[in-house]
Length: 184
Image 1: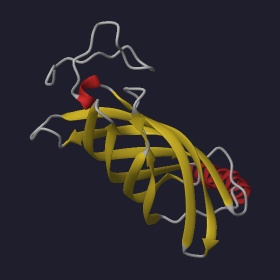
Image 2: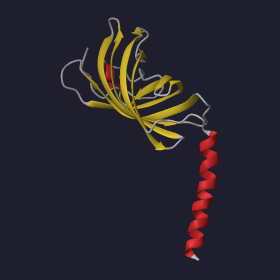
Image 3: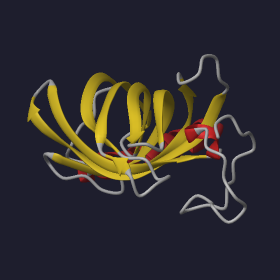
Image 4: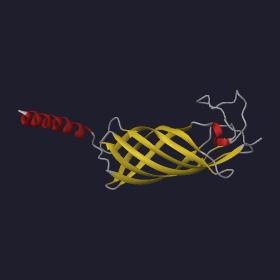
């Protein structure tokens, strides 16, 4: 009797798995590596300028085919003329959620956890952040994907720019204020 129940359970899982796999026409690789070049802009001053963001990532499957992970590292130098500069090293782990997939297109939303380390005035603490955004991946060949995404890295500390702030000067998305004051 137990063998029959086990067989029926496995058969049921197979029946459910095959249509789900067929629905997702884009077959993600089990592991992949990628590099990207993009833009970044601070959210601290009206003088913030668009700067280059360099990123490399390792992508892996978590729950095939709807959840992928991306462990990444990056570098950028945020700049607001005559206000601040922040040279950042970024590490993050993103979860990509793929609500549906087409033959050559994977749209996704992502969120994750990460940290930045500033290199402005010598040693500094790691500052936590939450990356959120949307994007898509498309096949260019059997072993080549093109990915485009846009998002926001929400720093969980306003110490990133090292500016002294008044109580009314807060982040545009959250009410975070600077805990430390390093510059005048």
